[in-house]
Structure formats: C-alpha cells, structure tokens
Amino acid sequence: MVLFLPRATARFATRQADALDRLTPFGERGGYLVIALVLLVSFFTAGYFVVYWRHADMDFMVTYSALVMNDGLPQYFFDHPGYLTILSVESWFRLLHALGLLDAARLSAIPPATDAGAFDAAMTSAVRAARIVSLLTALAMCGIFAALIRRVVSDWRVAQLATAAFAFSGGLQFEMRVLRTELIAGPAVIFALLVLVTAARKASAARPLLCGLVALSCMIALDNKVQAIFLIAALPVLLLPFGANGSVAFWRNARSALPAIAVLLAAAAFLAWLASPLIAAGFDPANMAAMGLQPLLPQTRGLYQITLVSWLLAAAIAYALVWRVSLFELIAAVLAAIAGAALGLCLLYIQYNASNAVAVMNPIELLLSFGEREAGGLDHSLGGLTALAFSQIGPLLAHYTFVLHPSPRPTIFLIWLIVPGIIYAWRRGERPTALQAMALMLAASAIDVIDLRRGLKNEYFILSDPLIIIAGALLLDALTDLRTARWAYPIGVALVIAHLAVGQAEPAKFAMQRSGPESICEFSGQIMPKLPLPWCLGPPRRS
Image (cartoon, rainbow, N blue to C red; front, side, top):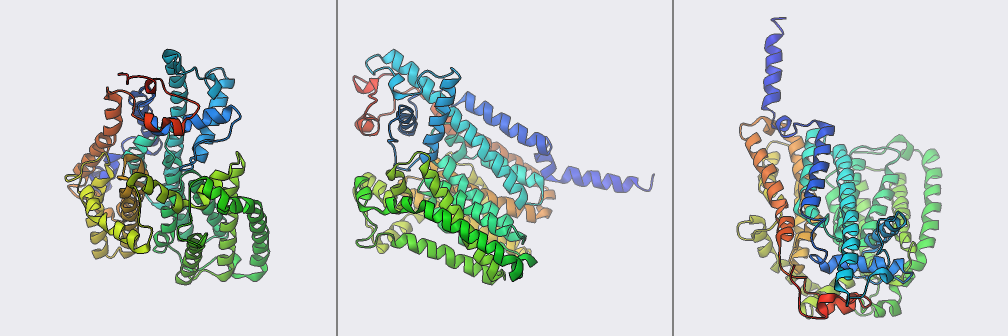
C-alpha cells in the first residue's frame, strides 16, 4: 500500500493542477443545470418584468404580427422575414389563451389606445408572454449547442465551458430577453456547422443523411433571418480543414450505394417539386415589386442565387477530392442536401404568404433595401461593395480591442487568447487544429465586417460569437499542456468573471433605464397600422 501512495498523491496533485477541473466544480450534469438556473435568474431579474415598451422596435413587430394572425388576418411583418419567430409566438398565444392564462391573444382583444391603462395591461401581458418564447428558445439553443459541441471536443469540461461561454455571450443574453429573429437563425447555421464537423471527422453510412439535416437547418435559418445567408456561404471554407479520409464500404460498393442513391433521388425530386411553387413565387416580379425589391443587377434575376448553389456544389466536390470521399457518397450527400433544403423551404406552407417566399429567395436584395433605407442609397456594384467592406476593417479592429470601442461582448476577451493560441498550436505541431481555429476566426471577422454596416449591434453578436467560442474550444481541447500551466486557472477565473459581468451589462442597463417609451411613433403606423400607441396620441410618458 505504501508503494502506491506516491502514485496516488501524484494523480491527486495533477487533478488539482488541472485548471479545467477547478473551473467546472459542479460536474458534467450539475454544471449544465447551474448554467440553466443562472439563465433563468438573469432573465427574471433583468428581462421579463422590464416595461413592455422598452424594446418596442422588434417586440412590437413580432407581437403585432402574432396578434394579427390569431385574428385570422395575414402575417404583416416580413423584413427578416421573422417567419418562425412569429409562428412560435402566435402558437404560444393560442396555447396560453386556451389555458386561460392570456386574454389578449388576438388583435381584437387589445383595448383602444385611448384607454391607456387597459391598453398597457393587455400589451404587458402579451409582450411578457412573448418574452417567455424567447427564454424557451434560448434554453433550447443552449441545450442543442451543448449536445453538439460535446461531439466535437473530447473533454466534457471543454464542452461545458464552451456552452457557458455561448449561454452568457452578449448576443444570446440580449436575444433571450427580446423578440429577435437572430435567436433562431444564427444558432441554426452554427448547429449545421457542428453537425458537419462531426460528420466530417468520422466516415459512416449515415453521413449523407447528416448533410440533409445540415441543409434543413440552414434553410430554417433563412426562413427566419435572411442575414444567415453569409454564414451559410462560409460553411464550405469552415468545413474544409475538418475531415477523415475515405468513405465506408457501404458507399464504395455500387450494390449497396445505388439503391440508397435511388431512394434519395426520389425524395429530393419529390420535395423539390413540392417546393417549386414557393421558388416561383419568390422570383415572381410582381411579388418582388410588392415588397419594393429589385434584382441585384438589371436582367440578372436569380444569378447570385445560382452562383451560391454552384459555390456550395463546388465546395462539396473539392471536399470529396481532398478527403477522398467516394463518388457515390458525394452524389448521395448532394441529393440529401437538396431534399433537406426543399423541406426547410416547405415550412413556409404552414402559414403561406408570398412575401415570405420573396424574402427567403432574395436575401441580398432585402438586406440592401435595409442599407438604402438607413443610408439613403448604396453602391450595388462589386467595386462599391468591396470598398465598403474594406472600409470596415479599421472599425472592426477597434471593436476587438474593447478599449477603443467598448461593447457588451465578452467574447472579445476570448479573441485575445485565441489569436496567440493559434500561433502556439502551429508551432507545437497542432497544425490541423490551428487551421481549423484560424478558419473559424476569419469567418467570424468577415461576418462582423458585414454587420458593421448596421452598427454591429448587440443582436448581431449571436451570428459570429459561436464561431469564436468553437475556435477557443478546439484549441483548449488540443493544447492539453496549457491546462496545468501556473497561470491557467487565474486566467480562466478572470475570463469567467468578465464573461458574466460584461454579458449582463446590456440587460442591466435596460432594466434600470428610466426614460420613456422607445421613439417609434414616426413609423409605428407603418409596422402596426391597426394598433395605434397611446404615447403617440399625445406627449411622451415617463416610466
């Protein structure tokens, strides 16, 4: 027994020196429970009870559309297009009304603006009920992220820390308190990426089906927020550094592969046929004109959409060549992706409106229309857009310093460690991991450059923050020697504290704010024509 004592002592000392053990003290399941509990406390402390008009811009747009649709009228808001968010709030209102928990579930149940007290009570109930949808969505997104990142990294402690970073990031903390369309769209593409990485690392007979799931997830993202198109376009670049050579025997053998391909071909053809009326409606000139959209370039309707599809197909072929994927598996993966994308598009049939199809099929035109509205015009030429992108690099670097441009975005502190971590990993011989992290960071920066056009607001952090977090998780998982470094635990504690404090800054600011209603009177008649606001009928009120 005495002989084994030194070994046991050494093992105990190693455990104590491992920073990850000390940063995840609640265990695997307990840690996730603590994350969920802290999210709930944060939401109800600074979110649920905030006055209903504090985030009037998007909260009112989504709530109004849900109330309108519950009155049997068509969806009114289409800018994002916000389709799934509006559907979820509409269904939630109906459920609460059926349970006797919400009286104002329809537009006709909202008292007139002239009765300010009754109007406030009804809208408070409706908006608070809708905020519960955001909370439930955020919790679901954190749960899915936790499950998927665990399959990407080998250590559950790394996965738990990455989940905590995602849960308390500035973007998700902001989004779970308001009705924002990015809360579904951003994570949906990130989940697609994590599924792709999982599939890429280990060949299996089911891998093409995972490609179909990825395409479905990407189309779900587009159904809710057209800005997801940039993340989707980045997926091929992000995936190429990940991979495992070859295909399993199932896809190398024509006798087993061809029947499977035939089934996938039938499914893809059927779903594409089912989605074809939506595609036609999306490109219909009359429908586009009704939304005030014009083709990106004259006489080029559908050109960049075809280019994007070609880019994704070319990337799939390049991946197959680099990682020696069999032709049969490549064909199956493409067919599964077509089926998944068509199925995601068919979700628009649940509450059909041609404007949703127009928005989803013409994402760039819709985004450029935002730029024109906000900046009074925009150069649509390739040179003009390229110059605009390069002009944003300086402001982005200032944003990443945090000192020159403070923001409620704690993932910036991760960037400070990830960049030297990539260099360290490369010099240590962990070059695949370094390349993977570098690709993720470049994609995150590119998304941020695009979002800087609209101010890189808090709500846009959720589109790029997960890429930064995944890059950090990959490095931490690979560089195991760093966990026992003398400075690892203090830095880890500092990051956790900074992440919690900075991520809560914006919610706390809104909760403590004492100014009057958000100034939306100038366009409230356009976004809510049948729901005038009391403070727009007279002088602004104070809370």
